[in-house]
Each structure stands twice: as structure tokens, then as C-alpha cells.
Image (cartoon, rainbow over all chains, first blue to last red; front, side, top):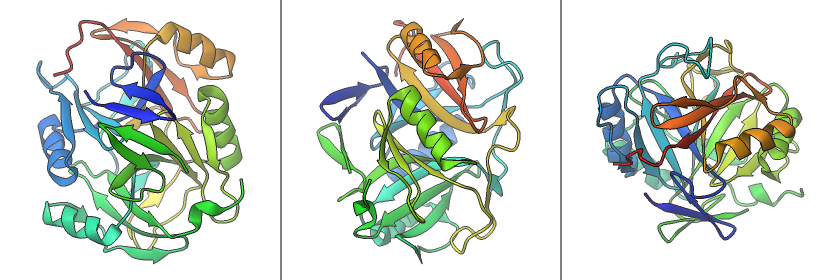
Length: 153
Length: 150
């Protein structure tokens, strides 16, 4: 399924040891989301949704994996919690793509059908823009300016 | 700051080529959240977030970026960032896939993590959820041997 190495440690999904961090997205249409992340970012499908709409799909994208599922009401292991697609104007957490060349990524991903909220804009410490995914999630695209990570600590 | 390798490709933060994926969390208290993720999961605080710079915490194959919320910015004119407004409604969350869920449950609980329930059996996996200091849920799941990955 693809491996990750950090500090000489291998990461896999499913992990053979330790743990591997993925991002879960509640989506309306698994296949639509798979195609979006595949087309725009070149994500690799590592598990297809085979058994109907409740069967999750996994895609690997750079150093992590996305897990798509349609969500739903509470389950025995999360009583009271409901999973639903996002409110597009109020967001708490999001995927943050750190890039080496934001102008190139903006041009490439736009040519592949990504909708950006704006073109890349200068900000303290970085240049930044946002993509809206098919369910309304925002995806940050940011390029840090030289020296940003050289602060003490 | 650090490196990751996937399929013989190196990932760094910040990347020198291509892209590296992090997960952004809007939090109420930067220090409290940084300490939580560093303590419970053995995350490495690679940038402390002095001044206007947000903290970065390396955790396994990815990085968490923490920041306080706020209203629209020129590059996201209609979007407001806030801590989870309702702890019972989520759209996306960090999903930690583990090799030994009983060991993780014990260890992370001993380090102060609050779990919604103990690990429970489900189709294809054993699963439980942690509640972070801002109310985010974090899935912890161990896939069963027969679970087909494509």
C-alpha cells in the first residue's frame, strides 16, 4: 500500500507496528471524492469501496492517506457523535498542503479542475491559497518563505 | 525540519520539492494543544509557535499545525475558522491506524487521553475514539487481518 519512512521508521497502512496517521473525510459520494483527489493531486487508490456506500475507500497522497466514508449517526464507539458533510463557511480543521512551488501547484491543480477561492496571496511568513473540494472542505496550499522554520526552539 | 520517505520519495517540512501534507487544527490554547499531542502521542514539537508563527508538531508520518481561529482573510474571504462548535458533529478528523489497539489504548490513557469508550469490535476493525482538549475526536483503529485493502 505504500510505505513511509520517518527517522528510519517505516509507516504503512495498515501499520505493522506503532501507528500511522490518516485523515478521515465524511463525503457525499465516495467515487466522486476518489476521482477528485486522484485527478487533482495524483493520489493513489489503495483501497476501493467495494461493498456499497458504507465501505470506506483509502487513497494515499504524499506522506499520508485519506479515508472517505459517507458518515452517519452515532455508533457504539462514539455515542452521541454524528458525522456529516461540512458547513462550507465555518471550518475547524483541514488538510494543509505545504508546497515547494505554489505558483506551479496553483497552475497545475487548476488545470486539473481544482477550484481555488483566490489566487495565491502574500502573507506573513508564507504565500497561501485555498482549494474547495467537492463536499466544500477547504484545502490550504501554502509555501513558507525562506527562514520561516529557522526560529529558535 | 524533518523528513519522510514514501515509495523512495523524500518528504520534508517545509518541502524542497513537491508537497508535504499536514493537518491544521483550530484550537483555543496553542500551548495546551501542543502539550497534549506531544505528551499523548509522543509528538515532536518542531516549531513552538513564537510570535505569529503557529506551532508545528510532528506525529508519525505527518505534522499538525495549530492555530487560533479567526474570521475571513483575503485568501479565504467567506470562511471562518473556529474550534469545533459542536462536539457531537464532525465532518473530518484525524484517524490513527494502529498495529496494537489494546497497547495504544492503555498507553495513551495512562498519558491522560480521554477515550469515549474502550476499544470495540466492528466490521473489519477494532475501534475507539479520543476527545482532544478542544473537543475534536481522534479515531484509533486497528484493522482485522482479513480486511481487504483493494
